[in-house]
Structure formats: C-alpha cells, structure tokens
Length: 375
Image 1: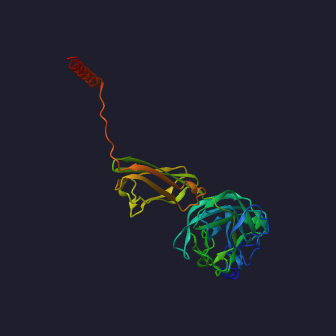
Image 2 (image 1 turned 90 degrees about the horizontal axis):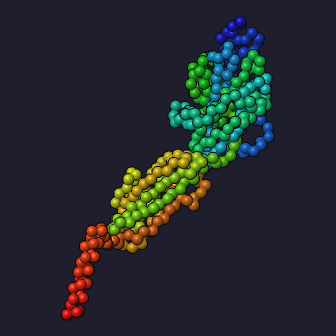
C-alpha cells in the first residue's frame, strides 16, 4: 500500500490515506453540487437554505469497513416558525459525489442544545431514519422520509450521513454555504481518521473541513404546515352548599398530539370570594391553573372552592389554552350557573317507631276531640 507524505496531505487539502489506486480520501470537496430539480410532488417548501453556495463541501460518508476511521457526518439547524409545527416529509441536500446511484442515506432530526457551538449544537434525537434510497442527482439528494417527522415551533437540527462504498462509488460531500443562518453547521469524525480532533459535533470551521471557511450547508426542508394539533377541552361542574360553592374543572387533551403550555383560567364573579383549590393553582386573580404538558388522551381535575358573598344565581366561566395548535376552540370554555348562598331547611323524618307513636298520639287526640263534642 502506498503511503502519502505530509506535504501531499497539505497539497491535496488533507489527503489522509492513499488507496491502491490514485484516488484518496479528502476532507474538502473542492466544488459545489447542483440543487436537485426533481419534481416537487405533494410536499411544500418549509425551509430553504440552498442559496450562496461556497464552492466546496464537507465529507459526510459512512465508508466500507476498511475505512471506518473516516466515517463522518454533518448537521445544520433550522427554525420551525409555525405554532402548529411542521410535518416534515422530505429533505433535499446539495452535494457532490464520485459516481451517483450507489448511496443510501441516514437522517436524524435533533432538538437544539443551547451553547457549546456557534452558538448552539444538536441535542436529543427526535426522529431517526436509516437506509433510505434517495433520488441521487450527482450527489445532490432528494430524500423522502418513510414516515413524517413532526416538529414543534423551535430550533431543530438535521443530520445527514451518506452510506457509500468508496472503492466503488468514490467520496460524497455535502456542499457548503458561504453565509450563516442561525448556528454554524457542525461536523464530526468519531474515528478521527481525518485528524481534525472533531470526534463530537463541532462547528465545521473549527474542524477545518470543507475548506475551513464556510459556516453552513446547503439543504431544504419539505412537508406540510401543522401536525402538532392538540384538541384541548374543558368541562366545568359545580355544587352549592349554603354559602359555599365547589367548582370541578376537568381539562382533557383529545389529541392527536401531546399538548404543551396548557393553562386553565377562571375569573370568579364579584359575588364569590376565592377560598382554596387542590391542584396547586393560584388566584391573583384570576384563578390560574398551570398544567404544562398534557399527553394525548389524558385528563386532569382541579376542585376550586369559593364563599358566596351575595346570594343568588352565579354564572362562572373557565377557559383552557395551550401553545399547541387547537383545531376545535369551541370546547375551550365551559360555564356553570348555580343558585348559591341560600340556606337549605332540613325536614325531619321519622322511622316506623316514630310513625307509630305519631299515629297513636293523633288517634288519642281525635278521641279526646270527639268526647268533648259529645259532652
């Protein structure tokens, strides 16, 4: 096997290992791919970062076993801007390759982890896909996800790795972008075959890959707006007992997604004075019950007690809200009317013995009355 010298590494933009042929693994593409012009189909464009190509690219390849030390991958971030979230169905990347048509790809969507990068890094994985056969246009991919990835309104990262044998199809590069949007893209080579020291996700310019000067990658996100719908519903009932009323609030998430930022508010009428609750709510006023996250199909209950200041009919309305999109707002409020503040008179009751005694007394009284009339 031929050994490559240090000078040739520098001259070839970090050639780190020579193969039996004249080809060698690179950590920079030296060119930019073309945007895939495959038909759009059903998905709509949600996010586009395919402008300002930098004329280079980063390695993002899972090689055959003999080159495992060079396995590498890249990721870049984007922001979901709709409150109802995005249903991501397709990812398109711009890239270059040796010979097209020999690849499958792995795709992972990550949550954002604040800090550690420029300024942030990928966090926890949200959706993971492996072994997808993309539409390959000379290294630019149109990747149809086998199942949608539903993402909420926040910053997320998309990570791509090309699974391709170097010996048969050459090397693949994800093309760079000369301008930065959000955080700088990141790159990692866990086996450190490229000798960058970037064995975990690190801003790509720090790693010196793709020419070492470009901050972002070329890609676009396709799918549908929505997907995070959560039908929140509130039911309110009440019981009046003398000068006290107890309201029972039942909050339900009818789905189909988990709900976030769920809050129930209840402005008590002027004729009622707040007393207590059993769910950790506060009355500033209004009475506020911060539920937070509520899973699809889940229900929670809160009992609120108040004292009646002015007797009469009392109508009270409570409302539920959340940060997820609610497709059925009509069931977000509930009203109950009670006759409150009236004293209930207790009517005594008699058992059979008491009724017998009463009957005997009435009979005796009747006899006495008859005797007086006859005398």
